Length: 121
Image (cartoon, rainbow, N blue to C red; front, side):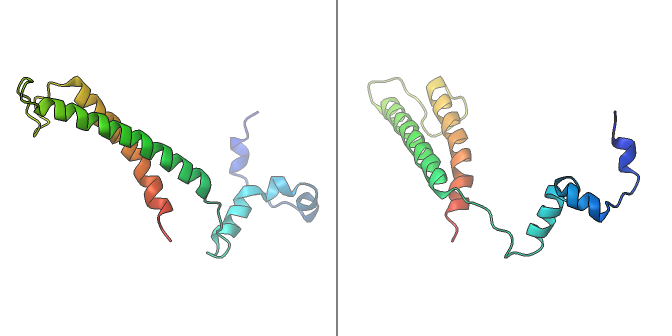
């Protein structure tokens, strides 16, 4: 049975309806209206410890990738290796460097919103 046709018909629950099934007639739509009605009511959990754990894990992963990228670029700069242009991304010949930069980019996109959000205060 589709309930969509009923959505266009206004219905006001009786006091008895409200007393018997408040979860049906009030529910989250009324609760969220109340919570959003004033800043003093708008209190949400921040999950600070979990955010810190995620940030520290991401930070470690990014640091490892950074170290690998720096080692690779040091290798490319060594005089006994083929000439590799370390100052451009165009014409990149190293698939490893491309992968490291792509991975770092993804990790930083995850890291930055959490870090920015949790560093406020």
